[in-house]
Image 1 (cartoon, helix red, strand yellow):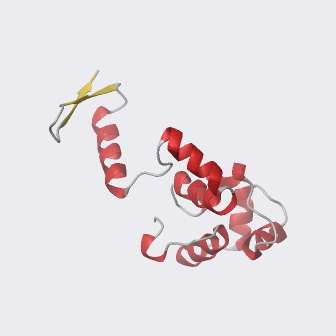
Image 2 (cartoon, rainbow, N blue to C red):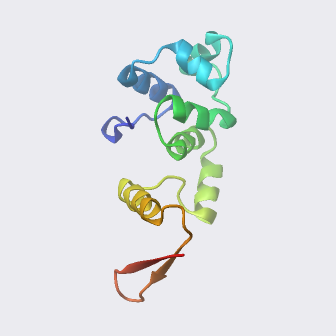
Image 3 (cartoon, rainbow, N blue to C red):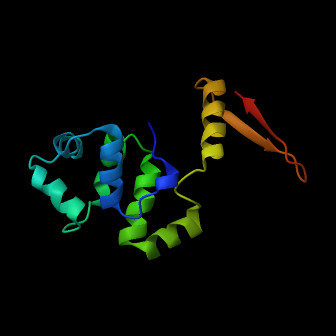
Length: 132
């Protein structure tokens, strides 16, 4: 299951609460997934008392059945918007659009582990992929 973009959370606290309801996850399950022993840590994150550490974004994404880039994007938007802007300015967006994700997954499936090399045709909306 993936996050419903129509009910996009604006904070990590909201994201945890929303996805927890959608997936029926207990605080203990998320606490375990994050590697914490004390469920009070998750309660403090959900209450906004402490921030989710950046190194926990991927673990939270797995627990909430989301894309890690989407969780990291929200975390950076909330805690370090200037850093997010600098990263995306230099490296491009952290998250792929749904169409980009489908295209990439289809490419990976078709490649079946082989190296790929895209070929772009100038001035035309055509991309060819060569499998090695």
